[in-house]
Image 1 (tube, rainbow, N blue to C red):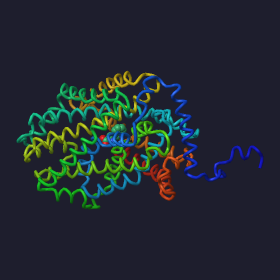
Image 2 (image 1 turned 30 degrees about the horizontal axis):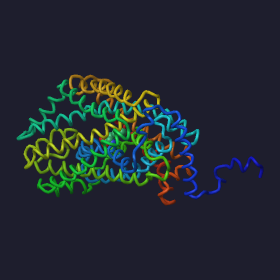
Image 3 (image 1 turned 180 degrees about the vertical axis):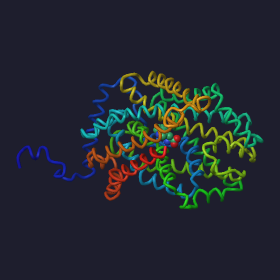
Image 4 (image 1 turned 90 degrees about the vertical axis):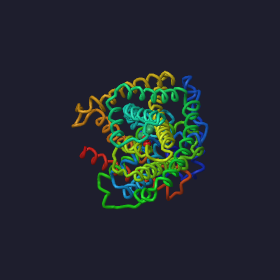
Length: 494
Ligand code: TRP
């Protein structure tokens, strides 16, 4: 053996280091990296550099995952796709694809520690660094997605104010759809509530990671869980349709599981877990540095379980209320804003249920909106813009772009922008139908193929060897193939 040989051993001949040894090497490297980073940090980055611990990370990341996707979208797509079989398939997607992809995305942030773009450059291989332009797609997608999300968040704020005003009392279905339709055509009101919602998000993000995001999500999320559990229990036991709701959600009828339902379930699994746009990446970068502190595996298990339970509770609650009042499951996007208010207006204690329910929707939307904005602010902050300035200017820019969304829901409804779609549907198609799967694909390929296996292993050290191999297999082969399949399907059918 020549000297050169032992100095630069080829990867396969590298002696198999134990997990502990790898973790140590990586911990040291992290420490050096952290020191190097501190040296060229701007002032705003060095204050509030990260979450205080595992609990803060888990609550913030659950706050990102739990959002309108769980409470508004999941119940209505379940309703449209016939219930049980869709739910079962969705759960499979979450387990087989969602969880491994979340490992990968958080790994990129925790290891790379440099925002949605530059983190890819710190993964230890040139091949991984080549993926960094996808970070700009994350930023663009987050921008567009938040401009839409902020509008819907605004509806939730508006409905909370209606609920407080006892506005649902004795409401007929016609009056409910009238109220919603009037809101869609009322540019000023929609913009006003959108601004309120966006201002709250901007404020929190401007405050920083530990003194803003952590502080507020650790108050809001526990509050959210308590309200949701209380309301679900109340609805299941008092609506008279609890059992019917349970059987609708869990009794599978596989004839209803069409290809389009499957594509929808898969896409929704990504969306609900905030994957494919850098949300988890950016929060991952605020985790404590060393691979063994705040283990990725345990955090992901908690986030995935919480996100799924919230979606299931929301479904059970909504369907028991709707069925209890003679409504239909397939109410579509109007389920939350049109069917529920009617039921609330009829039920005993409906006033309080309605107020709590819409407040809960607002809280869920806020903590997700915060995470969207943070994706962009994390990058702007790295460019030396300063967090507060970045948050405020981006908040204003995103809100203004959202005005166009508002316009396209009312007066601009019939103005076709792209392939027979109006602006709202076009944005929806690109942000959710194309960008999220594409982002997920790049993340899976980068971590599956371009990152050194031992390195990834060190960050998932809690997994047994066999489980780790399965995760890598899913990440390398199964996830990319399935993502390509849904993208092809979505593009063909859109
Ligand atoms: N998961 C969120 C929800 O269920 C929405 C979402 C998707 C999101 N991607 C994100 C939120 C990225 C923040 C960051 O509503």
